[in-house]
Length: 268
Image (cartoon, rainbow, N blue to C red; front, side, top):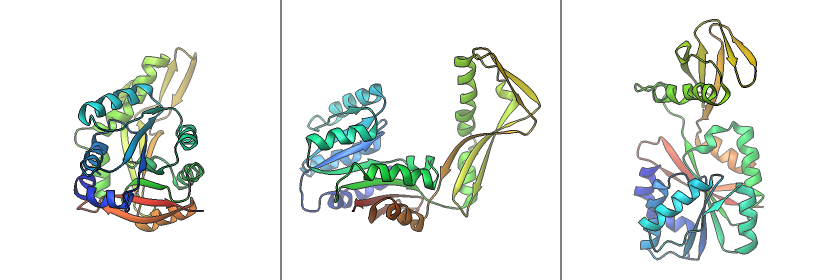
């Protein structure tokens, strides 16, 4: 995605504002803003008229991002918003009538299955006006070995990420998980494009939650479903756009075809 922004920023701006009209750039779950800063810096260099509104449920994240952007891009018009995406969008719509371009980046949509994605996007469509745009990132289907190797990475990062949930329960719920009694496993279905992460119990065991006064039994080889990551192809992306009230208008790919940022227009 970073490569897409670096290589296609001119084309992205032309797609966002072909006639150089003002727009609001609204980022849902902005995170650290490192990738977005590539676009923002270029937009400012081109004298585009826009306001950047990052939205996040975490006030600390919004504050940190706002401070960073003001240091890096002092001329940027930034108004951070803390709260629920949909409530914040309703608030913005009441006070601002510029064209809205919503950004949902980093393949965050991949954390939902198709029905959940469709429901989320329909709800998002409901707080947008016809002609508003959604700029959304999708991780694309690719060689199954490549995907499995990414999640079974040699540094064990995905395994550590998932095992950390057990450690969090130990810390916050007084649980007695022995992390050495579980291992990470990744499964990928190339037909559906669904990657799923599990933790596998290596033995029969009982885990006592001190704060809840409850014991949870695990049998050997029992699986704990941790997370999913949906991979897409263009047909799936177009279907998802159409089913949630959008029309896919342009796609931006990285050089290897691993990822796409798709620009959708809200229609009625």
